[in-house]
Length: 201
Image 1 (cartoon, one colour):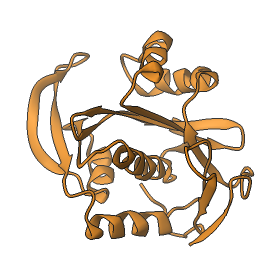
Image 2: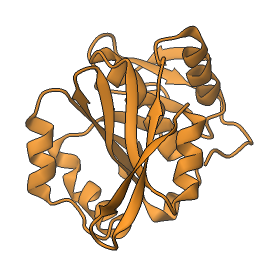
Image 3: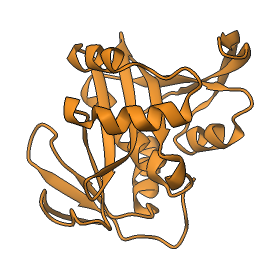
Image 4: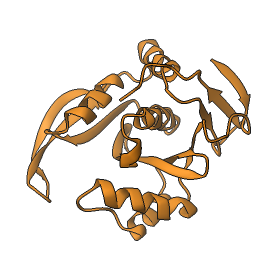
């Protein structure tokens, strides 16, 4: 693992993760429309970006937004509200990179545990969340209004433990892309990780 200035490695071969801004919304909405049966509106995203206790991120390859994720805080629970990747970039490890950064940002906001809902049929997403330490903790009947499908509720506890930090560092080291962080509070430092031959989900 190496550290470099925020401008380092920001080429097309680097995945840049940064806070979501209004200028990103056209690309975000284009992905949203492809991925979700009932996509969020521009106004909903705009409202979320203005609220406190939220973290919304985008991932870019060069200038192109290829994925995004969002989280909201409820007391000391970080609730993953959304995550999506351009279908042309599925299974390239982008969602995992976004989630690792989302976890770190949630801890900055005071999160001690994380939760999310996922369709019971979406085994690929469940495997991704398990790699981040999420485990099933219940279900919500007919949670998804488009087809009445149940949601599996998953939780990640003890996210401030040394074991969990080791998990995050291991996932970062396995990232397919060198990852640069830009636009976050504090020193602008990129965490660059050698590309691995092992493709993340």
